[in-house]
Length: 576
Image 1 (cartoon, rainbow, N blue to C red):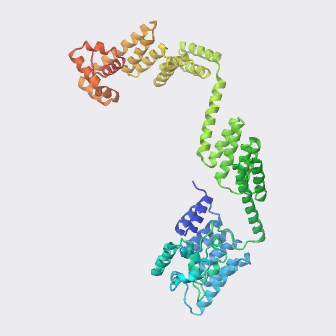
Image 2: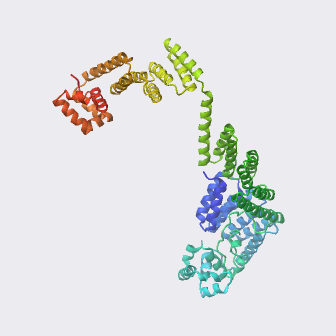
Image 3: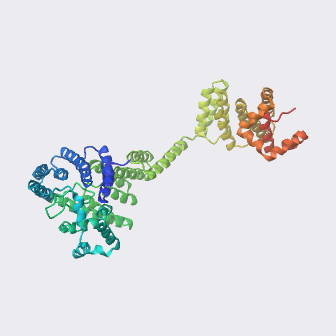
């Protein structure tokens, strides 16, 4: 989610591009997040005025003055909106009030002069100032290209055929001017043609740094078009000496940062530290200088200094309401420094704090990796074969006493102490089967045979769990595995008994359904349906119908035998 500052920046960019509708939308979203920020209302007022929505512009200007009564720009916005509404007397009063707060403001003085001129003309019965668009369009009548060429500020534009094409299009149809107002050259040319070339005495960059205000026109001088709003629209045209000094320091600080960046890229870390320190001294309110300095310390392996500097960055960021991304970056860097110091707990703490400020993918990846590493270390530190054996023996005693819950807890402890011993999983599977936690019992059996594929008890216990789940075909498959690994035939009796139980249960189940019902159920079972759809199995089933003895040969193939057991359990194949 965007912050108020991010939305404000987007609004300023839209304003500068002449997209005032989008600018209003961005400023409105920012106001929802920060409803006490007077600059947001001021900027939206300027956007409203640019669209000639002077009533809305006036409301925003009045809110600006309400929030910051001593801020001269608020009165300038209000005066501009009143001027647009042709309330010239009220505009004069507003500009005069603003000059009480900033007597040297050239913007207020100019607004007052224009409003007084308009008021005087209105008293004399002169023409109104409402038809601004026509006044601007009239500027493009006559020998326009010659006038543009005569002005050194605009002459260079004629070298671009696209610019000339736009001018001729406006001459052909003045209504087309609105299509090209986002082109700063058209705006500047319009001012020049209206006899207001002095507006650009400072050049295009300064034009982009002045605030947009509806201006009054003299009887021979039409009102200029809206001018683009800069990103920092709250800055007045004439700054105080203190403001000028601050701006100069910020500029020098930015220069020092650029030198620091260059040194950092060249891995000249000592020089980078010097330059970032200079930047911090010149402008101690910018969190990025501290973040960059912390990065240098990190690259130098000075992790304590990195952490200390990044903590200072967080304090500065909080105090001067820096973007949350910058604060998150400082916290993330502290986390990485702690990770290098092998302090996983502190590293994880700061990664989590960073993610609460801003969810960055790289920080999340680092957090997950450290959490996994910490868990692994905790598990490794807990390993103890002797204590695992003790826990398993306690579990065996509880199992014999039919205290299955207590037995499960001891077997789990044995697994934590020694997760590579298959006996622990096999014993817990037996316990879980008694507790009717059958899926978990099967998982433990599978884990056991993954550690020791010859562990016969794991197969028989899995078969018992599957039998209780009425998965008879799968139970028979597990028993076949048990037979394969029971080389010494120690478990033959248990295997045969469980196998007999399975076939008895299958026979009883099939006796309760007709062959048609069995086929209908089989078709609804994806596993059985897949077996029936297998061309090889279809051929085998046809052979068995004509020659039942063929089944014996096919049962020697484990895969075919498993499929036949599935069909027998489903009642498709019935043994006589």
